[in-house]
Amino acid sequence: MSAKTREFAHPETAELEMTSVLFALSDPVRLELVRRLAADGSLEVAECQPRSGPIPKSTLSHHLKTLREAGVIRNVPQGRQRSLSLRREDLDSRFPGLLDAVL
Amino acid sequence: MSAKTREFAHPETAELEMTSVLFALSDPVRLELVRRLAADGSLEVAECQPRSGPIPKSTLSHHLKTLREAGVIRNVPQGRQRSLSLRREDLDSRFPGLLDAVL
DNA sequence: GCAATAGTTCCAAGATTCTCGAACTCTCAT
DNA sequence: ATGAGAGTTCGAGAATCTTGGAACTATTGC
Image 1 (spheres, rainbow over the protein chains, first blue to last red):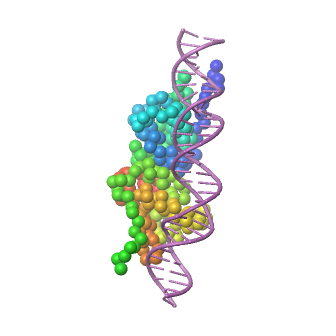
Image 2 (image 1 turned 45 degrees about the vertical axis):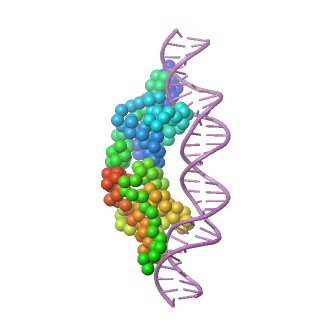
Image 3 (image 1 turned 60 degrees about the vertical axis):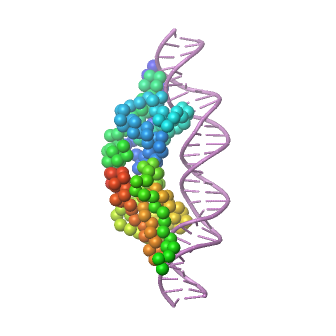
């Protein structure tokens, strides 16, 4: 079935707000994750555990949601897992230089 | 008198933390203020009222504190008022490109 | 000295955010 | 189908932020 693939709503590039992006990046766990994504290209959720020590899945999921709703990352279903990636081009086009400065 | 001029403690450049800076900038009122400071050079507190409408002095003062403690602005006494300015060089040296991307 | 001005600090209430267990949804394998 | 694996969503309590009035401090002018 094509089906109700658990696709998430991601904000349009034009709708990204600077304050929301900055807020999403202002948390150590989230910032580390974004940097990891920038380096590794794409990750699945299980690989997103912070170095500082493992956190519960639900907590991690909450951080992913914050990043996704701010438009920082993309979260697409891939089989039974999910593929996370940085919305680098979108961010670069909307806020030139911001990502580079943060990474 | 040299005196107990109400000098504030400002964090050293080397101690600035990226997450704190991003958080400080993630509020609309504070971000607007930082942009104004970048354009105007320096302001006194009374001139920092947001365009959206005046806010109580205590609320404004709280935002100034957040920015100051994150190391984004400098707040020095100047007679009976205070002079606010952006710590542009400090920020540029610690987080190159960040300020430019945000302004 | 006294009053006025410029801001900060204090404190309490309200609003967000964070954290995490438990329940739930999908998808793949048997 | 049944079960297991990967993540999300729900709900509640803790922690943090935000707001704003009232009191306080410091400086200038009369």
